[in-house]
Amino acid sequence: MNANRHATPTEWIDTDDAPELTDEFFERADEYLGDKLVRRGRPRAVRPKVALTVRYDADVVEAFKATGKGWQTRMNAALKDWLERHPSTQEKRGDAHT
Image (tube, rainbow, N blue to C red):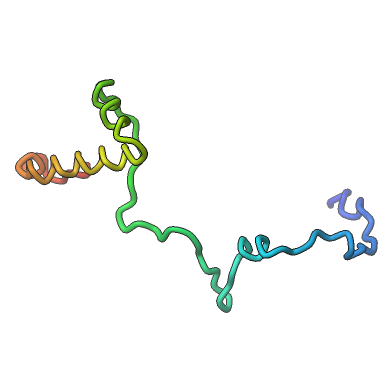
C-alpha cells in the first residue's frame, strides 16, 4: 500500500496562476493525427551513420578541419570516393560493412 498516496491535498487551483500558452509552446507541442503522433524533425535515414572511434594522423585531421564547418562530412565523402575508386578492395573482403 502506498502510504504517500494522499500526502498532497487536492485543492482548487487558480487558473490565473498558470503560465501563458504562447505560440512557442504550441510550436513545440506534440501533434496528433487521430491517435498517431506526428514525428517532427529530420526523417530517419535509410542507412544511418555509425558512431565509432578512430585515430588519424594529426596532419590529416588538421587539413580537413582547415576547410571549415562540415569537415567531417567532407572526410566521409573522401572515404566514399576512395571506396568507389578501389572496388576490388571491397570484393576481396566480401561485405564492406563488416
